[in-house]
Image (tube, rainbow, N blue to C red):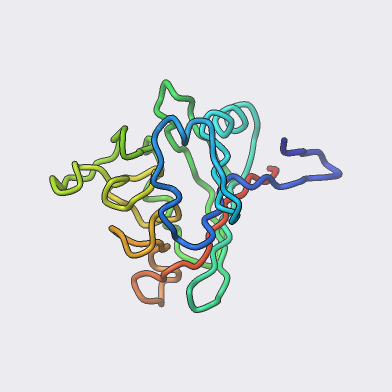
Length: 183
């Protein structure tokens, strides 16, 4: 459990995609309880994520390594995941970081998996689902700009779109991590 006090704050990892494999192509039930493997891929679980963020004040931090070997970060001072009744709807604001604010586009979206479509994507070839198109569950709008649970080389790809205002439209990721940190 994350520990927050004025004297100490221990961040809690909620996601790690080590290499853009097919690991995050999971069902609603699996994302609900969480999962991991021996290589370090990890998802905390939407139920616990909701319980933590609805009852406490946490920031969300992304640490992203590109295939070129550079590290970037994004932090959101407000991060809440609603409970399952609301399909784990995302509420995020208060951006700070050294890359583009890609997650803001997906603010207000409900979680989508290949077996529960809650996004706005329209494409019959992918059953109108970003999770099917991208090969992984997340808070998609129309497949999004923040693609950290995506299979490399599939759909929009394992990437964060437009890392800076002066960069190419996106950078491919090697690794992504998401953390809960104290307010």
